[in-house]
Amino acid sequence: MVNNILLGNAVLNNENNLSSTASGLGIRSELFDSVASMNRSAKQKIGFFEAHSENYFGESIARAKLLKLRQDHPISLHGVGLSLGRADELSQSHLAELKRLVEQVEPVLVSEHLAWSAYSHRHLPDLLPLSLTTQALDIICQHIDQMQTALGRQILIENPSNYLLFDQLQIPEPEFLNALAQRTGCGLLMDINNIHVSASNIGRNGSDYINAVSSDAIGQYHLAGYTEVKRDYQGGSESILIDTHNQTVYDPVWELFDHALSVHGARPTLFEWDSDFPEFEVLLGECQKATMLLNKYPVKSTGSTKLGEQSLISSVNLAQTQDDFLDRVLNLSKTLETASPEHQHRIWIYQNNVFGAVQDYLKEVYPATRGVVGADFFKQMAQVFIQSSPPSTGNIHFYGEGMSTLCGSFEGLDGLPYLFDLMRYEWALHKSYFSIVSDALDPSVIPQEELLTSSVMYNDSVSIICSDYPIYEIQRQSLPKFQGRVSIDLNQSQDNLLIYKLGHEVQCMVIEAEQAAFLSALDENQNLLQAIEGLQGSIAEDTLSKTLSLVFETQLLKCS
Image 1 (cartoon, rainbow, N blue to C red):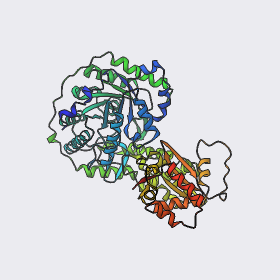
Image 2 (tube, helix red, strand yellow; image 1 turned 60 degrees about the horizontal axis):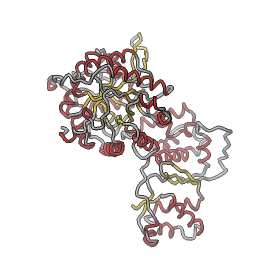
Image 3 (tube, rainbow, N blue to C red; image 1 turned 180 degrees about the vertical axis):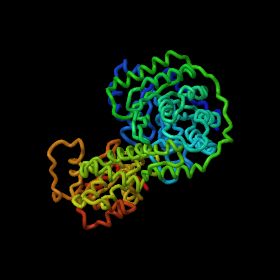
Image 4 (cartoon, helix red, strand yellow; image 1 turned 135 degrees about the vertical axis):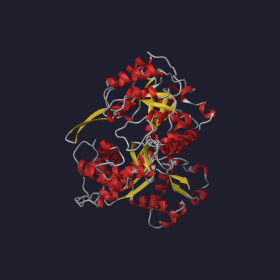
């Protein structure tokens, strides 16, 4: 359980003085320019910004922009990938990267979800439903304790959007959340849109749900928009609300928000919009609506809610349930037998979410590849890759390196002999963007003899790609934003590319074959002297001198 020292940083008494009537906006990469150009009136409408933590892992321009935004505005961090509800151990590397981000950003609030995304070696980019049993309660309490201890502060746990119920006796969700808060000292993030979406999808009463949550634990509200989807089911039509975050807040959600404020009082409130962005004024308008409602109600507490007897809830093994769930999502199964009979077919919702999210991500990693093979063919490639090699970590930016191995698996790619190299090049650009560059070797402070014999290695951003094809131009002319006539002769050049990051900018240079040979030799040897001696007689002295200057000027090396 979180001790009193940690609770000194708790959001319910946060030392950052974030007003309970503050309304905030989810910050996304598409919004940074609009936020930077806000006038004074617009700035007054936004009390804070909230960022999805995993989008800012690693060193990137996006992270630099977030840290700059933090200089003038309070920031909250909202995690989507730690998978607190997983049946096995938390990812320590994910937790360490989150801790590093928290230490840099110094957020006013930190939150995660009552959900899971991973079990064993598979990690899907979606918030998957947790079976609310006593075993799950024990496990997620342990994981919350680990997270709060690692971060040295209280976190908030958000209620999920539900599309199905499991076919076993469950602890009521509000009671489950109250138990989490009581046992771990965590706070709760009440997502009003999720409450309405779940109430519609599985037959809850949203107001009763809100009434059952302990006021003392609530540290924040979320608001967002949903999308209604109608599908054929058992000879009729089934209406499902999907938590899409790409609409304005609907009236039933505003009404539930008003009810929550009347019961629990004002708390900092975040408006989320994640895709299909409207004019920025629309987002400001939603924040202003939230602020007007917040100002109608005082901050208050109705005390803790009495907990029920969780010990009476029996459960099947959580690990088996999660392993089966992952199998059925990835294999595109038609039903989920562990769900209640009337909800078993709704596995399609999670399949759509997972495959859609990963395909959209891979499209950003391999934009030129998609341009070469076409959108439909790329979607097929992505689906096969996801099924054969699903993500293994909550940091999605690590995913996708092996997709180039599919080039030999599909008919119709024989006429694209350069595709494998193109995909290697695009992955190198992606990897470099998110890499952390540190401990650069400074030749000015090391004696020459020691410099030549020191054990060195490239920093994590560096890649050297040698191709029989002009992949630099192939990639450039295959991008969606390219304008002009495509003009590529596959015989016109053999490209040798050096990819690295300097500051936050990824650089790519077409280098000479001799330079590439030396740089590759340096990658294979322990020091500069071995690389030079290994190529003695096969590289011109002036080329060697020029390449060494390039290595040091661009800070490619670090001590190993």
